[in-house]
Image 1 (cartoon, helix red, strand yellow):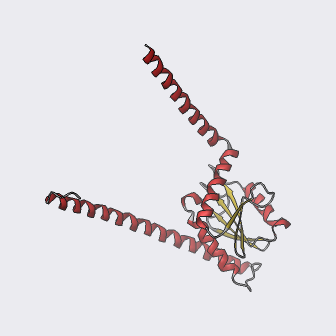
Image 2: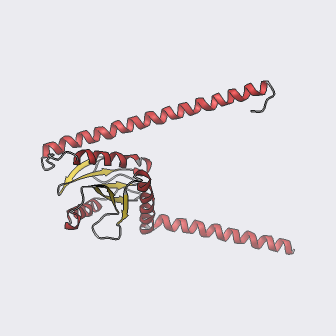
Image 3: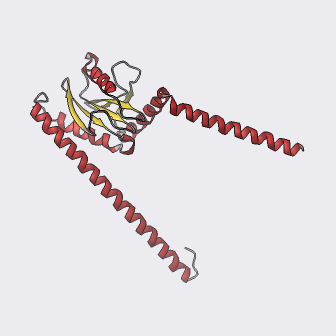
Length: 223
């Protein structure tokens, strides 16, 4: 009876522990503030992995400075990130514009607005804009494609390297929008083909290993 009671107590403790874990997970999923913090931590780590030579500053507690500021030599970019389960609303985009226009952001050279899991209302994926002389890109579902941020940085650096480029010229900006979207589509096609190639090669390697193992068995040799 003592053994049974002891087992029952241990079992109940395990149930309570698992229940607490489940409740904590549920709370984090439902609480938008906590969920946002999780998204910020995730993106902060990813940015450091993508740009190991850059300085990534967490600025989400500094008014009008976005969530992060990325500095790499003379390159300065602001990152605004959203971790929503639905498309990011227009009001959030409007707040982003206000931040870009703020005088405290005169040091910025470019900015990117990212949504981890969803789209952004009234904005295409990789949509290019110029706000207050600052080039901007909007990126959808970046958790599934972190390399799109790296592609954006390359795009910005190319633009910023053109000293005589007039970003107030609507015709130039319009052409850049089209080119930017084409770059994104082409990159996606390349990535899909590489993923397919990798999958096919991995399958062939597995088959080759199986054939080699069968060959060793014929000679009663350990593979």
